Image 1: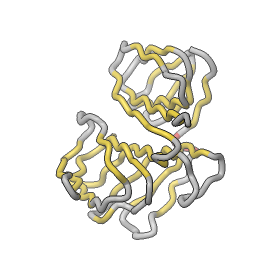
Image 2: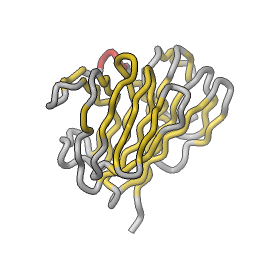
Image 3: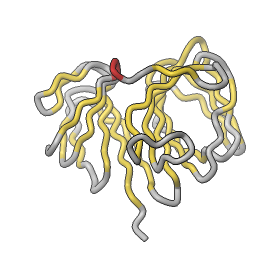
Image 4: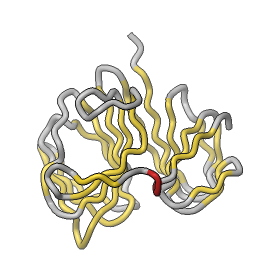
Length: 181
């Protein structure tokens, strides 16, 4: 594995949503310092505390994985209950989607891209699994405490990675790929 940059979950500020239904922790955004209206890609963790609509983003695609709890998503051609064992779910962020936590609060990982500029891929990795990080911007989110390239990661810590890696525990790998004109 090449360069490794650690992003500790505990150091990402927990900010309330505008609708009061939860909070979000921004892990990374491009370009750096971009806001909700001008990002090209964004990676964040959210706590969903009560049912409500997802924010609408014109021209944006989203991939979501549940880290804790169960989240029921509904919308046009969408009716899915996601839990920590579910595959990440991709959907358009410019379509109406409602989310409802089932049985208590939910924590999720959310990756969003402007579909004119980037694509995003999110996959679950198991202990001992080897992954090749594509020619992209890649983030490894530890789902449990583990070592990655000699660095200790707590659950929900993230590392920006490149090259090949082997994980010691469950994780999610998120890859943002630029669309070439």
